[in-house]
Length: 431
Ligand code: CMC
Image (cartoon, rainbow, N blue to C red; front, side):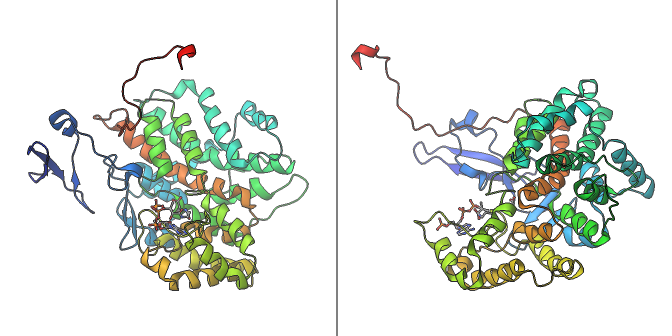
């Protein structure tokens, strides 16, 4: 809090409200309107939270105009080049980069928690084989709340660590179980000598009848994608986790709520929607037609993977993933993937188009991630699950920050009511 203030004039009464201005480490100042209703009797209106900071946070910073993304102050580009997903997870959870000892003990703890309770594993048999994996994953994560009553004192830091490590460690196992269930293949138990992403590839692609060799290029690509997806400050799913968690609900349920929010095509579901769209476009010859559809206001079609609420410049994650696409496709021998060619051409056309230029619609993180997942052999229906595995780290970091906030209050937005005024009930024979 500073001495700076902001004044609001009520034109009807001439009253002035003097509101405290809070100055962040980086980014625009924030007018604290917490006392506005009690002092002035008015609410603010900001559907979609376009200009509203819903909380204070020390985790992630985005400058949407400059295309900057920092995790705990570190540029995501540096982390993508030098770090690993597990190290980034530690950074997001605990606020600083780990020492060698801290990192190895964190890794050890994650390895300790990779297995699922056998009863939880049996839940998958209750799902139809063609259930969407996001439905299975959100259901099973919500069910974790029924398994760990013994470590659910939300004020005990040890319990919170166990929750955090447990859910981060188990998400790949749950995702792999959902995938294997959809294939009708036997579930592959985790192999704890493998690193986080190699273990995930093993659980996804190995079968008991064959030896499975992990491709280090695939494991590294996955690790990079997970770093880039690990957190993104107060996005829709993270805000959902915070809001659900603010009631003091079981944290596994709060994470399950985040998974549900992520599923939508305007959010994490966009990576699946991009591939569906590229298939629909089919060939470079059809690009102009689909770009015209995206600009037509009477047509609900949008260019999936384009646009972002915060980035009004290139999404820095998209830049890194675009580069990674070239490398991964070259390494995995898929260099001439027609889907990648189509995506590059679509990007070129849209970036030159006045509509996309004026509205500052650039490719976002999801535009290219699906192309890499596809090259790794991950089916389209699993793309959003991949996003959920990585974002679980961000959700847990934000949930923990919210849970530790001594001034934390239940999230409870107000509304602009425009329904009927007061009216009397009429018995049915008088209506
Ligand atoms: N194609 C065509 N027009 C678009 C697009 C698009 N992809 N995105 C935005 N617009 C237009 C929109 O119609 C609106 O036009 P107008 O001002 O004439 O009404 C203008 O651009 C602003 O769009 P908005 O919907 O008001 O912006 P928003 O901040 O509410 O929504 C968004 C952001 C990401 C939901 C939206 O850009 C979108 O639907 N994009 C496609 C889905 C997508 O790629 N989502 C992934 C986001 S990044 C990963 C993540 O967050 O999980």
